Length: 204
Ligand SMILES: [Fe+2]
Image 1 (tube, rainbow, N blue to C red):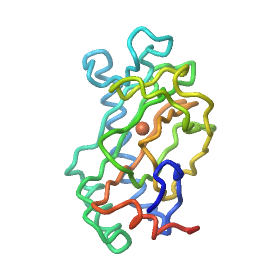
Image 2 (cartoon, rainbow, N blue to C red):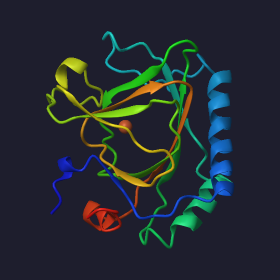
Image 3 (cartoon, rainbow, N blue to C red):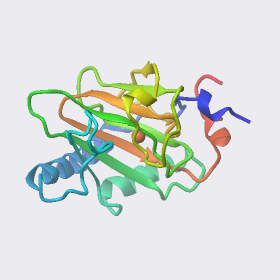
Image 4 (tube, helix red, strand yellow):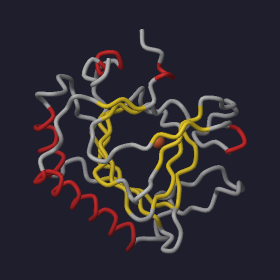
């Protein structure tokens, strides 16, 4: 049995996406980012808004997803099927947009409680020095998925490579830093166990 909290990010033996598919998916993501820009302020649902009232509650990030039936997503599932031999219907292209032109923004510590793990691929990190931080010593204070920095302890910083398949641990609180503009992430939730997925890792 794998200790779930030990695995933060683990790279997988899955080939890089061909450039043509990277371009299609990136274009679809950029279109979502443009819609976020146009609709800024109209849709309060599209805010990553941490604990209200905290110093970090300035909603500097918008987010959205590419439509489930996009051409890019269909091609992506077809591309992945020989390498991930499990159902991958749950696949998303998540788009973050920094709404702040002058400063970098961050996604504060949170957990993604809808999945045990995911297989991610950064199409576009969103800046030159984007970092993901994980927090092992956190106070399990509430059912909300966002945490205050005071409640998560010292971080473990993991720079995640662009365009490299990896297993991501969404159960430990994690934050994303130094987002300059638009970040586009493929998120795949295969119907298998973490152990099965890690059999595809590079370094076991
Ligand atoms: Fe997350």
